[in-house]
Length: 368
Image (cartoon, rainbow, N blue to C red):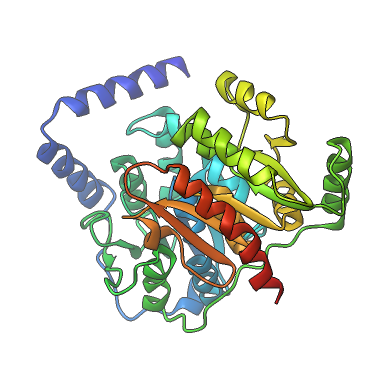
């Protein structure tokens, strides 16, 4: 195994020495000649396909914006076995979207061309005889493109700019008229003939709800209080200690209200020190289903570009997003229950006041 890993890294190093144009040309030649990657054959029959491979975005937020797109596409291939290839971080959420699919997961650190793990995946995929390979990553690494080509699937579809032939033989161009990312992505479903918009219904089991109720009691949270969720991990990392402290202090000053801090994963020493200083209930390093149950319990959630924003949006709870002005329309679709607050360079005290003003009014509008 060590020998295989050594040569994998050596091959990658030598490959990196080649000029960029030579690298792409070499890989295209390998896919075309050695694996005989076929050209597109039209028309195709979705119902006749037996095996499809879906490669999800590596960024969990980008993957969330593919959920409704994917849910519209999957039923078209009603007779096919669905295999999903994704990072472990994305897989933990997507397993709740399509539990019947076969999941093949990897760590981003292992994702480089000629790595031992990706060489093994390439061998597996080249023998699977996929009818379709669907690449939903907008800017894929060359190692992902190489896997797509090695599937030798008759249909290898992705977004424009994601990769040339022979890696991809269908290129879908998102509509420039659609600002919201999930709506842009949905053009892929339309290309394959999906007409109805599928909706994600995030189900939380009674057992998980009971677990969360117990956790709340252990954290001395009154079940009758309005719970305000704060994406502390995101805000602390993006905007710093002082801004996040001011936000928490202003929000927890409201009547009949308890603020709780959400952290995706295990907090580092700096974040741990911050949450300890706030003396608020903290929920970290939980499973997606437990996070979902907590979000259901919240009267309102404050976040930004993170998995918690997307999870809250799917569940349909009142949600306030803090985004840079240039990307707000891409990641936040304004509605009765979802509002975006923008800033130009960095959020300031006025941003905090705007958030605080929205917390009460947003819940009132949703309830009425």
